[in-house]
Image 1: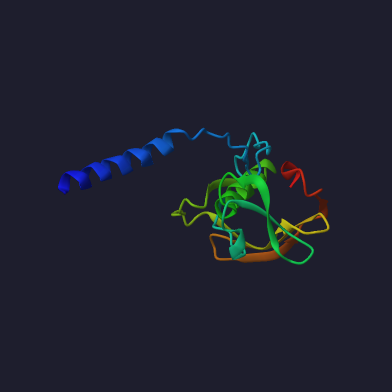
Image 2 (image 1 turned 60 degrees about the horizontal axis):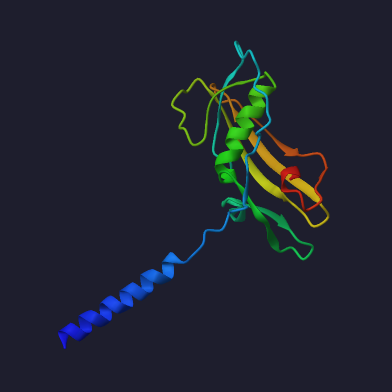
Length: 174
């Protein structure tokens, strides 16, 4: 009886493993995109204010690595075979730091996820209200920002990006 049970288990196991051997790999055509990939760094940042870019706040549905847009009915749609290289909550602080340095106006010493231990740094925080495209092909970037100086002085404002159009097809344009 035990011999039959052992033989049956061996037969079932070998059938299971032979089914796995016949799978053929399929290429992954997913395209990976990085925010601020083409930003040129500024050559000289001496005597520029030293900054830290904190963790950005995003609407919860933007926390993953999918590239999303909104349809006419308001549903969120994921771009097929396209992903962010890193979640926007991590990629956006890096992109903001790169853009600040590219202007030559700030020397960004660190950005999220690295902690800031230097109290002499200016702290920059950003809260995005929108960071997606809509059904009409408009890319919407709306954010509130706050800058806190080493002395505790606070400056804040709101940024609304100029109208940018997207055809809904070419994710690189997004």
